[in-house]
Image (tube, rainbow, N blue to C red):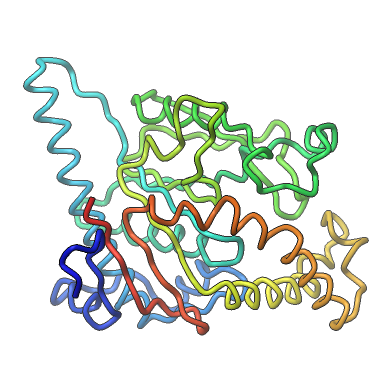
Length: 309
C-alpha cells in the first residue's frame, strides 16, 4: 500500500468485510431484478459485498453532515434549514450509473432512520431536440454544450438552500427528448441522488459547478473496451425491445436492421460520439470523485478507491 497515495484502496474482499455484522439485506431477488438496468448484471452477492458497505458508509457521512448542520445553526443562533445530503454519480454511457443510483436510493431509504431519498437524472436538463437541432449539435447530445447548465445549477442551488418544492424537467429515453410540460417535484428529501454523465464536469461559462453542491460523489469506472462491449450489447437488446415500439424515436431507424448491421451501427456511434465524449469530458473528471468503483468485464466491482483529500 502506498501511504502517500491520494486514495485509500480496497479490493473486493477488503471492502466486503466492512459491512456491519448481522445486517439483514434490504433487497430481495425480485426487487433487484426491478432495479437492474438493461443488460446490467448485478447479483445479490454484489449487493451484499459492495452496496451494503457503501450504503452504511454514506449513511455515516450523512448523519455526521446533519449533526454538523445542527451544531452550526446552534452556534450561529439561526434556524436550521432542511438541506439534503446530495450524492453525485458520474461515469460513461452504459457503465451502469443508473443501476447504481437506483440501488443506492432503495437501500438508503430502508436504512435505520428510513430517510426520504429522491433520485434525479441530469438527462432532464438536456436542451430539447428542437434547440439542439437549431444549435446544430444534435450529434453532440450528452456533451457539455448540450445541457442547460444554468438551469441545472439553479435547480441544485434551490434544493441545497432548502426550498420547500423544486421542480426538475423529465427526459424520455423512448422519445429521446425532454417531455414538454412534465416535471419531477422534489420536496426537501433527506438525501438526493443526482445521476448523469456530466455531473463532475467543469463548465467554464458558469461561476459554479454542479459538483459544488455535492456532499459525496461516486465515479463508476471500467476499461473502455468493456464499456464499449456493454454499449453494443445494450443496443442489440434495445433493437428487439424498446426500438420495436412505434413511439420510439429510433423505431424507423433501427427496429428492422439485422444483428450484423446493429453491431456496426452501435460501434460507429460509440466511436464517433460516446468514446469521444468519454475521453474529452467524462474520464478527466474521475479524479474529482470521492469514491471510484471499478468494474470488470462481468460488471462486478472488484476495486474501490476512496479519495483522502
